[in-house]
Image (cartoon, rainbow, N blue to C red; front, side, top):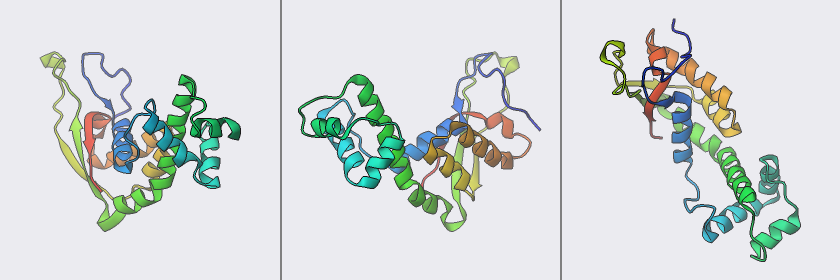
Length: 189
């Protein structure tokens, strides 16, 4: 059974961790505010989302947005603008709260009808010298249980997501280690 890749890219291969590609796709499926936080409309939409209810305020605090209520009110009333660091905190808190809010719905969609078909696009070896290239092909698989993957994604646990994804791709058989790094992972729910 293959081990984890130790020195990825040493010979010129390009790609990203499969778990990062899964997180990116889950973020895309979760939707949300598209306007950047640096634009007034995007900032106001995020602040309203994070302060609408007491539950969302508590979740925002837990996600790292630890400013006073007075500061939040000044931002909402547009009397003050957040600093660059606070804009980053607002964006991070928004992403975290949004993930927690849609995780249950996404999980239900992904697990429906026996799971979700996943397309795995292999890493890019165009820069690897010919004798060192692996024979890696496009693969598809049906992921039946998304619970650990979505739970780790929703909580922001990168290592947990990586472990859950690797436990899932083991179903590809003895070649699963070739798909630890990929160019893209696609699925729809």
